[in-house]
Image 1: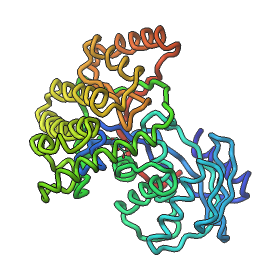
Image 2 (image 1 turned 180 degrees about the vertical axis):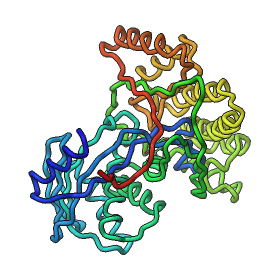
Image 3 (image 1 turned 60 degrees about the vertical axis):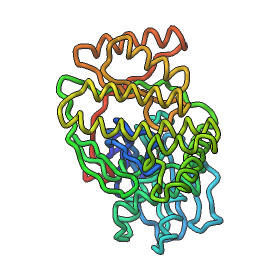
Image 4 (image 1 turned 45 degrees about the vertical axis):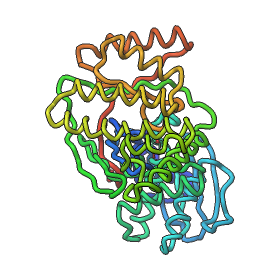
Length: 383
Ligand code: GLA
């Protein structure tokens, strides 16, 4: 769908012209489940996102139409006016979180669609939150800074969607820059743009098209394990604020105080911190072999220690290794979704063909393939 088509659907529904905003999904090269542990992440925005045509309607009601769900929702902006539709909660949550920060929100009409695959680990929900947070800030001239816009999306997940996520997805969706990855220190929110153009390589996502049930409660449980391990370490080492501040030695000191499961989770997080730093260093030297090696390391940790992979993802990772792909790993929260792969150009066609064939033979359907194009973050679409 084009922006013009979106505008014309808006006009048919609401009889007026609206303004179009967009915010993208994201990839993450490395640094997974580190954001809520005060560690580093290394995401970039992609060329797929949510597009919304919006206009203030002079009332205190929101009227929203989702093209993808073919669904309409009308709701207020007070706390007990929560919409029934799950997709509308993201928009409602953004309105509420803006108000909680002391700003005035007004009613509006909106029509939106997305081309970021749902449930694929590319953060379609952060794209939705960021689109509306960015749009309302712009339309209502609220003057909220970009960091706070990202936090508004994150709090929406926490308080209206039941996921105690970190800041990575909303940050990437708001701050994305074409051709650049961002290394964000989630403890301090300091970040740096890194030009990312691995010559001779392609970055490709393979989507299992599988989303396992209970992903959000399992996600929240991982977070609790980390917080528990961190609390035990901090009791002995007060300088440790987040689990990412801890060393393996510190973790071993509390091994007998925490469950074997919490120990494994924490071990993964502490290992992941070093892998991100190694990747940054290697990128600076153009050493993609090391980048790829650490990606495999992350997959192993997410599968065996953090236990957020699944059979389908492990199989895609295995095929990548067999084909000689430089780096491959599960991307995002896990429990289904995509692997991210760093592939030499000359290997690309053979890898994709092999992955499709073998995966389909085992699971009855092919994985979906998405070439990654690193793109700009939230913006108003000028047409
Ligand atoms: C999800 C969350 C992020 C992050 C990743 C894992 O995408 O929304 O905050 O924790 O999982 O790295």
